[in-house]
Amino acid sequence: MSSDPTRGRAAAQRRIAERRAAEAAVRAAEQKRRRTLVGGVVAAVLVVVAVVAVVLVQTARTSTAADAAVPSGTAPGSSQTAFAVGSADAPVTVDLYEDYQCPNCRDFEAAAGSTLEDLVDAGTVRVEYHGMAFLDSDRNDDYSTRALNAAAVVASTTGPEALERFHDLLYANQPDEATGSGLTDDQLVSYAEQAGATGDAVTAGIEDQTYRDWTVTATDQASKDGVTGTPTVFVDGTALTDLSADGLTAAVAAAQQ
Image (cartoon, rainbow, N blue to C red; front, side):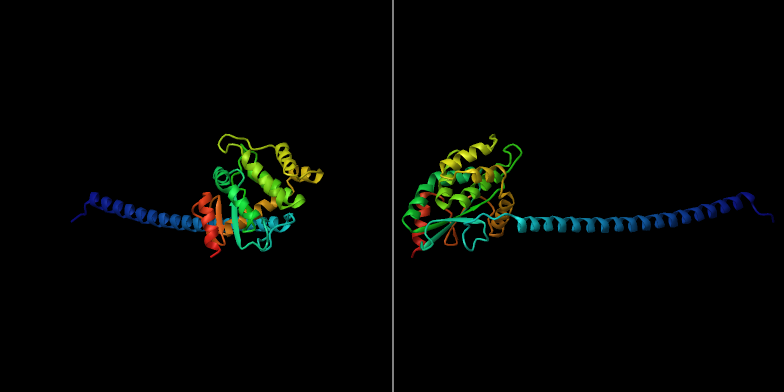
């Protein structure tokens, strides 16, 4: 009996189709393997690049901090990032972390600043001012940094009493954070002069931003100290939660007991 040619052709076609399907599956698997391999290599390269970038940034920041000009007169034990006002023998230390562009810092100054000064004058409190600069913007021409640098210039050239006066003047004349452009360097020089800091060294220090790198160090140190916002106030190491004059007075009294 003769075979059916139609059935034979159909079987041959099925075998061809199966072989082609198998070959296609092999090719697909190989392509997937290659994509996985390439993807893994790319991911590894990206990880290396990211690590290198982080190391470079950290190295640059460390180098900047190491090379930063440090103002004279910083408080002992403050990592050279704070200025002290008041007697070293005062029984209570108040640490004030602030940004000169911070509206809440201005409000604290308005509410409790005179009380704090009275406590300093009475010999009860020694204040350590920890400046920060994290409210810089293009709009205010990096005012936080420029103001903190200017404060460092005043303290370094003229002393803590001039710094205290300059500190008060900056808050009394604080530009609006939302719409202000920040005080100009000429205005900062003028307020420094009103505070008693005069001369070419003061003008040059403010205009040239002598302590700009130091402001980065000071801001980083505040973060290391656990500060996440301004104003932050510690009375003998205990965080002040009531930022009113009465709250400050009560905390200082409690610290003396």
